[in-house]
Image (cartoon, rainbow, N blue to C red; front, top):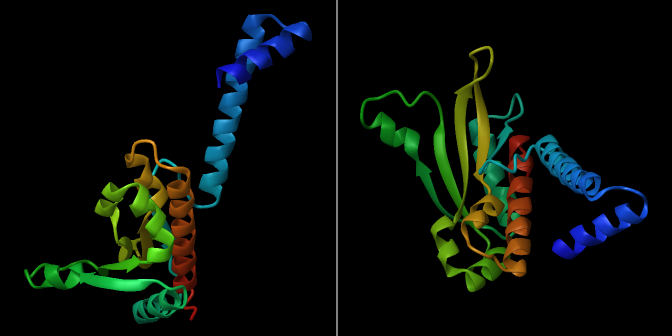
Length: 189
């Protein structure tokens, strides 16, 4: 980093800029790059500052359609459904209205996750990957169905000095899970 910084200052000084102007240019350049990266990620629906990735289920796609689609698409992409947690049923068992669907589906794809776990076994605390199906009110107070994901790339930030292959694996795992969610949100099989 310092070599790049000093090389940049040297180039700007040769071009007639003072070190202060060069330093300001470097900071501005870094700010613009950070803003562009954040803006691009948020535009893509991924907030780099949040573990949550959320997709609204398309109008006309039922809860059952989403569940069936998740199962079909995930199996087709070599993901095993390790377990399902029907939190809404547990809430109902306490005689409380769960206010809509509240379920968690856990998925594992050892091919995609193995490199993370081999390099950083402590990442097991984030396994298996979870996709939630839930309802919440929209701006008009109408209940809408959503899919939510705890992003593996965000979880990897909790690991000190993750290996390059773990970073690549986490991204591949997240990309696959997001594909599953988007396909399930439209009832794809």
